[in-house]
Each structure stands twice: as C-alpha cells, then as structure tokens.
Length: 137
Image 1 (cartoon, helix red, strand yellow):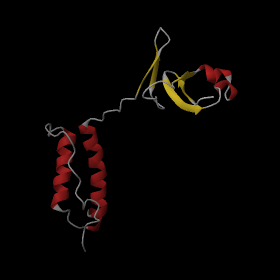
Image 2 (cartoon, rainbow, N blue to C red; image 1 turned 135 degrees about the vertical axis):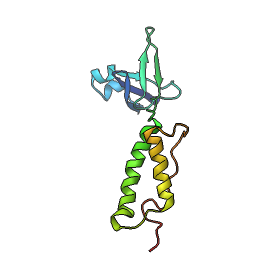
Image 3 (tube, rainbow, N blue to C red; image 1 turned 30 degrees about the horizontal axis):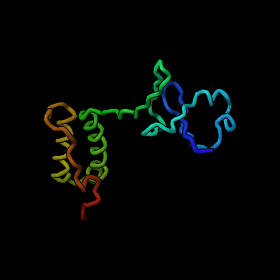
Image 4 (cartoon, one colour; image 1 turned 45 degrees about the vertical axis):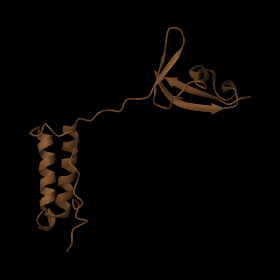
C-alpha cells in the first residue's frame, strides 16, 4: 500500500499529522479515524495547529496559524522590566555607576513604553554590557 498522510482535526484545528502505509482503521479507533482527513494530495501539507475548515461541498481547506502581534509598547514594557533588573544586578546593587549606553537604552525603552516615543517601529538594540558581562574591573 502507498504511504498516505492524514490530519486529525478536532474543533477546527489540526491536532496531529499521521503518515502511514497502513489503513487508519487498522491502527486507530473508529471515532479517531472519523475525525481524520486524507491530506496526501494537499499542498502544502497542513501541520499541527493549522486551522481546518470543511465547506458544504465536503472539501477541506487548511491555513497556517497567524502569529500573534505583540504591540511595540508592550514589547518595550517587557524589555524595560528585564533590562532594569539586569542593570540593577550588574551595576546598582554593587554601587557602580551605570554606563551611559545602558542609560540611553533604558530611556529609549521607557519612551516607547510610556508612549512619548510614537515614531519608533522597533526596539533599540540592547547594549552588550547590559548585564555587566563586558564590564572590566
């Protein structure tokens, strides 16, 4: 028997891809087999977590999941929390002064996070010495 590929669909989402040269009914319970769709001829072959929609005609269509878009402001808030912690651990708790490039980085993140910078389209690049690894004694 030729190899076939099946998508197990549950609640409109592909939960598993099965590739086999056996009949599904010889491998799985009838309820599971009934929820499988032969995708051998589908291109591209759907993957787990893709959406699956069956038309009234019985034909299936599959779509890759759309990645969630995290707003830049939220990304900046998260990066600021992490960078502030790293800065404190690398410099503040030892009473050392924070390098100017890190201060500039933190201020840039803060401006995006608080909404005063509305022109940036991406986060600034973190300085190499953010966590103190590039610091010399």
